[in-house]
Length: 143
Image (cartoon, rainbow, N blue to C red):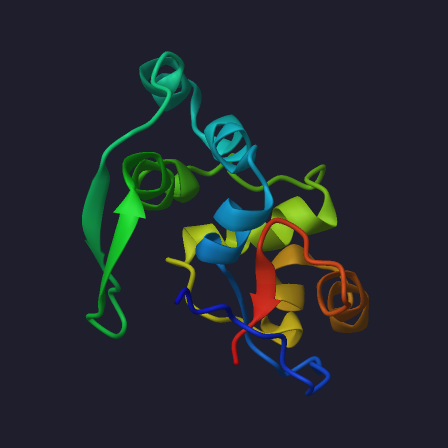
């Protein structure tokens, strides 16, 4: 029997850590790879443009040392493209900015308060956007 993750009944606050739940995203949005590909730098967009699927690789979380199986495109985005200076700009939408900050930090949990310091938007606005019932790009509280 497949295990399904349930939503927490606890309402998130500006101090609740959020992360990108890639498993949720993959099961709820068939276009997740297209979005990830659009976040790649131009060099890697060319590399991945004709690949329909990429192989999975083991990725080691630099904080916890946990090993996660991730998509090769996802790894390239996290290990290279997210570290470039133009990965996050002042013109990046709020949801995209939250997503990109989390990717650039290895998808370690960050609260709206922490995200606000980097993105430059109020923590309450970030919480209202990503803390509701609607899930955007897999952005979910860590439960």
